[in-house]
Image (cartoon, rainbow, N blue to C red; front, side, top):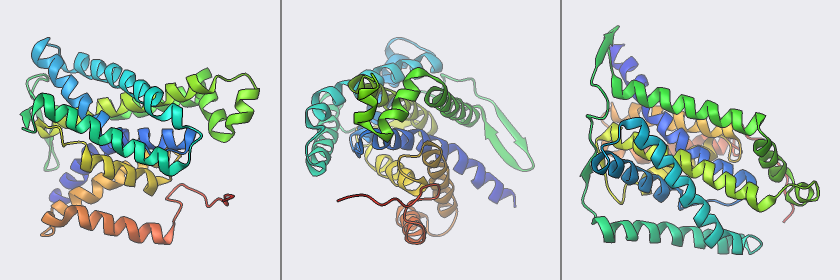
Length: 293
Protein backbone atom coordinates (compact mmCIF):
# COMPACT_ATOMS: atom_id res chain seq x y z
CA UNK A 1 0.00 0.00 0.00
CA UNK A 2 2.82 2.39 0.86
CA UNK A 3 4.49 1.69 -2.48
CA UNK A 4 1.21 2.38 -4.27
CA UNK A 5 0.72 5.72 -2.52
CA UNK A 6 4.31 6.72 -3.26
CA UNK A 7 3.89 5.95 -6.95
CA UNK A 8 0.62 7.90 -7.08
CA UNK A 9 2.38 10.86 -5.50
CA UNK A 10 5.29 10.60 -7.96
CA UNK A 11 2.78 10.37 -10.81
CA UNK A 12 1.12 13.60 -9.67
CA UNK A 13 4.45 15.43 -9.66
CA UNK A 14 5.39 14.25 -13.15
CA UNK A 15 1.85 14.58 -14.46
CA UNK A 16 1.57 18.19 -13.33
CA UNK A 17 4.59 19.03 -15.51
CA UNK A 18 3.11 17.18 -18.50
CA UNK A 19 -0.12 19.10 -17.89
CA UNK A 20 1.64 22.47 -18.17
CA UNK A 21 3.19 21.37 -21.45
CA UNK A 22 -0.09 19.94 -22.77
CA UNK A 23 -1.91 23.20 -22.07
CA UNK A 24 0.23 24.98 -24.67
CA UNK A 25 -0.73 22.43 -27.31
CA UNK A 26 -4.41 22.59 -26.53
CA UNK A 27 -4.62 26.41 -26.42
CA UNK A 28 -2.93 26.86 -29.80
CA UNK A 29 -5.05 24.13 -31.36
CA UNK A 30 -8.20 25.61 -29.87
CA UNK A 31 -7.46 28.99 -31.43
CA UNK A 32 -6.03 28.23 -34.90
CA UNK A 33 -6.31 24.42 -35.19
CA UNK A 34 -2.51 24.05 -35.34
CA UNK A 35 -0.46 21.28 -33.73
CA UNK A 36 2.63 23.22 -32.67
CA UNK A 37 5.29 20.51 -32.70
CA UNK A 38 7.94 23.10 -31.84
CA UNK A 39 6.38 23.33 -28.37
CA UNK A 40 8.65 20.63 -26.93
CA UNK A 41 11.72 22.58 -28.01
CA UNK A 42 10.39 25.76 -26.38
CA UNK A 43 10.12 23.71 -23.19
CA UNK A 44 13.75 22.61 -23.62
CA UNK A 45 14.95 26.18 -24.19
CA UNK A 46 13.07 27.27 -21.07
CA UNK A 47 15.03 24.72 -19.05
CA UNK A 48 18.33 26.00 -20.46
CA UNK A 49 17.45 29.64 -19.87
CA UNK A 50 16.48 28.88 -16.28
CA UNK A 51 19.80 27.08 -15.85
CA UNK A 52 21.62 30.08 -17.33
CA UNK A 53 19.98 32.48 -14.87
CA UNK A 54 20.86 30.25 -11.93
CA UNK A 55 24.49 29.66 -12.93
CA UNK A 56 25.44 33.02 -14.42
CA UNK A 57 23.23 35.45 -12.52
CA UNK A 58 22.98 33.50 -9.26
CA UNK A 59 19.20 33.77 -9.48
CA UNK A 60 17.02 31.84 -7.06
CA UNK A 61 14.51 29.27 -8.29
CA UNK A 62 11.51 31.57 -8.61
CA UNK A 63 13.44 34.30 -10.43
CA UNK A 64 14.76 31.65 -12.83
CA UNK A 65 11.23 30.31 -13.30
CA UNK A 66 9.75 33.73 -14.07
CA UNK A 67 12.70 34.62 -16.31
CA UNK A 68 12.31 31.40 -18.30
CA UNK A 69 8.57 32.03 -18.69
CA UNK A 70 9.13 35.56 -20.01
CA UNK A 71 11.89 34.44 -22.40
CA UNK A 72 9.80 31.55 -23.75
CA UNK A 73 6.74 33.81 -24.11
CA UNK A 74 8.80 36.14 -26.33
CA UNK A 75 10.18 33.15 -28.24
CA UNK A 76 6.68 31.78 -28.80
CA UNK A 77 5.49 35.14 -30.14
CA UNK A 78 8.52 35.31 -32.45
CA UNK A 79 7.88 31.81 -33.81
CA UNK A 80 4.22 32.64 -34.43
CA UNK A 81 5.08 35.91 -36.17
CA UNK A 82 7.85 34.57 -38.41
CA UNK A 83 6.77 30.98 -39.12
CA UNK A 84 3.04 30.53 -38.59
CA UNK A 85 1.37 33.87 -39.32
CA UNK A 86 2.42 34.00 -43.00
CA UNK A 87 0.98 30.48 -43.44
CA UNK A 88 -2.20 30.95 -41.43
CA UNK A 89 -4.50 30.49 -44.43
CA UNK A 90 -2.35 27.84 -46.12
CA UNK A 91 -3.26 24.14 -46.15
CA UNK A 92 -2.87 22.54 -42.72
CA UNK A 93 -0.23 20.11 -43.94
CA UNK A 94 1.99 23.08 -44.90
CA UNK A 95 1.76 24.57 -41.42
CA UNK A 96 2.32 21.15 -39.85
CA UNK A 97 5.52 20.60 -41.84
CA UNK A 98 6.68 24.08 -40.87
CA UNK A 99 6.07 23.28 -37.19
CA UNK A 100 8.19 20.14 -37.47
CA UNK A 101 10.90 22.14 -39.25
CA UNK A 102 10.95 24.80 -36.50
CA UNK A 103 11.24 21.99 -33.94
CA UNK A 104 14.35 20.54 -35.58
CA UNK A 105 15.79 24.00 -36.18
CA UNK A 106 15.58 24.95 -32.49
CA UNK A 107 16.92 21.57 -31.45
CA UNK A 108 19.95 21.77 -33.72
CA UNK A 109 20.69 25.39 -32.86
CA UNK A 110 20.88 24.39 -29.18
CA UNK A 111 23.10 21.40 -30.01
CA UNK A 112 25.40 23.69 -32.03
CA UNK A 113 25.85 26.18 -29.18
CA UNK A 114 25.69 23.84 -26.18
CA UNK A 115 26.58 20.40 -27.66
CA UNK A 116 24.38 17.38 -27.01
CA UNK A 117 25.92 16.73 -23.59
CA UNK A 118 23.68 16.50 -20.54
CA UNK A 119 24.14 19.30 -18.01
CA UNK A 120 23.31 19.06 -14.29
CA UNK A 121 20.58 21.33 -12.99
CA UNK A 122 21.47 22.77 -9.55
CA UNK A 123 19.38 21.39 -6.71
CA UNK A 124 20.68 24.00 -4.26
CA UNK A 125 18.24 26.62 -5.56
CA UNK A 126 15.71 25.28 -3.06
CA UNK A 127 16.24 24.41 0.60
CA UNK A 128 16.34 20.65 0.97
CA UNK A 129 13.69 19.27 3.29
CA UNK A 130 12.02 15.88 3.54
CA UNK A 131 8.82 14.75 5.16
CA UNK A 132 7.43 11.28 5.75
CA UNK A 133 3.83 10.35 6.49
CA UNK A 134 2.06 7.01 6.22
CA UNK A 135 5.26 5.58 4.75
CA UNK A 136 5.28 8.11 1.88
CA UNK A 137 8.32 10.31 1.26
CA UNK A 138 7.90 13.93 0.16
CA UNK A 139 10.68 16.40 -0.60
CA UNK A 140 10.64 20.20 -0.80
CA UNK A 141 11.47 19.96 -4.52
CA UNK A 142 8.49 17.72 -5.22
CA UNK A 143 6.16 19.94 -3.19
CA UNK A 144 7.41 23.06 -4.98
CA UNK A 145 6.85 21.45 -8.38
CA UNK A 146 3.29 20.43 -7.54
CA UNK A 147 2.28 23.75 -5.95
CA UNK A 148 3.86 25.77 -8.77
CA UNK A 149 2.08 23.72 -11.44
CA UNK A 150 -1.27 24.01 -9.64
CA UNK A 151 -0.83 27.77 -9.23
CA UNK A 152 -0.01 28.24 -12.92
CA UNK A 153 -2.98 26.12 -14.04
CA UNK A 154 -5.35 28.11 -11.82
CA UNK A 155 -3.84 31.38 -13.09
CA UNK A 156 -4.41 30.21 -16.66
CA UNK A 157 -8.06 29.46 -15.94
CA UNK A 158 -8.50 32.92 -14.41
CA UNK A 159 -6.90 34.58 -17.44
CA UNK A 160 -9.02 32.65 -19.93
CA UNK A 161 -12.32 33.04 -18.10
CA UNK A 162 -12.17 36.46 -16.46
CA UNK A 163 -9.93 38.78 -18.51
CA UNK A 164 -10.58 40.76 -21.66
CA UNK A 165 -7.86 38.89 -23.57
CA UNK A 166 -9.27 35.59 -22.32
CA UNK A 167 -12.69 36.48 -23.71
CA UNK A 168 -11.02 37.42 -26.99
CA UNK A 169 -9.27 34.04 -27.06
CA UNK A 170 -12.57 32.23 -26.58
CA UNK A 171 -14.25 34.33 -29.24
CA UNK A 172 -11.51 33.69 -31.82
CA UNK A 173 -11.64 29.99 -30.95
CA UNK A 174 -15.36 29.86 -31.79
CA UNK A 175 -15.32 31.99 -34.97
CA UNK A 176 -12.28 33.98 -36.09
CA UNK A 177 -14.12 36.05 -38.72
CA UNK A 178 -17.02 36.93 -36.43
CA UNK A 179 -14.58 37.91 -33.68
CA UNK A 180 -12.77 40.21 -36.12
CA UNK A 181 -16.07 41.84 -37.11
CA UNK A 182 -16.73 42.51 -33.42
CA UNK A 183 -13.52 44.52 -33.18
CA UNK A 184 -11.19 41.86 -31.77
CA UNK A 185 -7.58 42.06 -32.94
CA UNK A 186 -7.13 38.48 -34.11
CA UNK A 187 -3.37 38.73 -34.68
CA UNK A 188 -2.76 40.10 -31.20
CA UNK A 189 -5.03 37.45 -29.66
CA UNK A 190 -3.25 34.59 -31.42
CA UNK A 191 0.15 36.05 -30.51
CA UNK A 192 -0.95 36.28 -26.87
CA UNK A 193 -2.08 32.65 -26.98
CA UNK A 194 1.35 31.56 -28.20
CA UNK A 195 3.00 33.68 -25.51
CA UNK A 196 0.84 32.16 -22.78
CA UNK A 197 1.36 28.57 -23.94
CA UNK A 198 5.09 29.07 -24.41
CA UNK A 199 5.41 30.64 -20.95
CA UNK A 200 3.84 27.52 -19.43
CA UNK A 201 6.25 25.36 -21.48
CA UNK A 202 9.18 27.40 -20.13
CA UNK A 203 7.95 26.86 -16.58
CA UNK A 204 7.59 23.13 -17.25
CA UNK A 205 11.17 23.03 -18.56
CA UNK A 206 12.58 24.56 -15.38
CA UNK A 207 10.45 22.24 -13.21
CA UNK A 208 11.54 19.11 -15.10
CA UNK A 209 15.18 20.19 -14.89
CA UNK A 210 14.78 20.50 -11.14
CA UNK A 211 12.90 17.19 -10.95
CA UNK A 212 15.45 15.11 -12.90
CA UNK A 213 18.52 17.21 -12.05
CA UNK A 214 19.57 17.41 -15.71
CA UNK A 215 18.91 19.17 -19.01
CA UNK A 216 20.01 18.49 -22.60
CA UNK A 217 19.07 19.75 -26.10
CA UNK A 218 17.14 16.55 -26.86
CA UNK A 219 15.02 16.67 -23.72
CA UNK A 220 11.99 18.23 -25.46
CA UNK A 221 11.35 15.49 -28.02
CA UNK A 222 9.71 12.73 -25.98
CA UNK A 223 7.93 14.94 -23.39
CA UNK A 224 6.62 17.04 -26.27
CA UNK A 225 5.03 13.97 -27.86
CA UNK A 226 3.66 12.79 -24.52
CA UNK A 227 2.17 16.21 -23.81
CA UNK A 228 0.51 16.18 -27.24
CA UNK A 229 -0.92 12.74 -26.49
CA UNK A 230 -2.08 14.06 -23.11
CA UNK A 231 -3.88 16.96 -24.83
CA UNK A 232 -5.59 14.56 -27.25
CA UNK A 233 -6.39 12.14 -24.44
CA UNK A 234 -8.11 14.83 -22.36
CA UNK A 235 -9.81 16.41 -25.35
CA UNK A 236 -7.76 18.60 -27.71
CA UNK A 237 -8.76 22.25 -27.47
CA UNK A 238 -10.19 21.85 -23.94
CA UNK A 239 -8.02 23.36 -21.20
CA UNK A 240 -9.25 21.21 -18.26
CA UNK A 241 -8.89 18.17 -20.55
CA UNK A 242 -5.22 18.94 -21.17
CA UNK A 243 -4.57 19.21 -17.42
CA UNK A 244 -6.42 15.95 -16.78
CA UNK A 245 -4.62 14.21 -19.64
CA UNK A 246 -1.20 15.34 -18.37
CA UNK A 247 -1.85 14.06 -14.87
CA UNK A 248 -3.17 10.77 -16.26
CA UNK A 249 -0.04 10.31 -18.39
CA UNK A 250 2.15 10.95 -15.33
CA UNK A 251 0.22 8.42 -13.23
CA UNK A 252 0.34 5.78 -15.96
CA UNK A 253 4.04 6.28 -16.57
CA UNK A 254 5.08 6.04 -12.92
CA UNK A 255 2.76 3.08 -12.43
CA UNK A 256 4.41 1.18 -15.27
CA UNK A 257 7.90 2.11 -14.02
CA UNK A 258 7.07 0.44 -10.71
CA UNK A 259 6.49 -2.90 -12.49
CA UNK A 260 8.74 -5.24 -14.44
CA UNK A 261 7.66 -3.44 -17.64
CA UNK A 262 9.74 -0.37 -16.79
CA UNK A 263 11.91 -0.53 -19.98
CA UNK A 264 8.71 -0.42 -22.06
CA UNK A 265 6.96 2.35 -20.13
CA UNK A 266 6.45 4.57 -23.19
CA UNK A 267 4.99 1.72 -25.27
CA UNK A 268 2.66 0.61 -22.47
CA UNK A 269 1.42 4.14 -21.83
CA UNK A 270 0.71 4.73 -25.52
CA UNK A 271 -1.01 1.35 -25.84
CA UNK A 272 -3.34 2.12 -22.93
CA UNK A 273 -4.13 5.54 -24.38
CA UNK A 274 -4.81 4.09 -27.84
CA UNK A 275 -7.29 1.65 -26.33
CA UNK A 276 -9.03 4.43 -24.43
CA UNK A 277 -9.20 6.67 -27.50
CA UNK A 278 -10.68 3.82 -29.53
CA UNK A 279 -13.52 3.81 -27.04
CA UNK A 280 -13.79 7.63 -26.80
CA UNK A 281 -12.08 9.22 -29.83
CA UNK A 282 -12.80 12.80 -28.77
CA UNK A 283 -10.93 12.35 -25.49
CA UNK A 284 -12.15 12.26 -21.92
CA UNK A 285 -13.78 15.69 -21.92
CA UNK A 286 -14.20 16.14 -25.67
CA UNK A 287 -17.42 15.93 -27.62
CA UNK A 288 -17.82 14.44 -31.06
CA UNK A 289 -18.35 17.19 -33.62
CA UNK A 290 -19.15 17.00 -37.29
CA UNK A 291 -16.84 19.04 -39.49
CA UNK A 292 -17.20 20.03 -43.13
CA UNK A 293 -14.40 18.72 -45.35
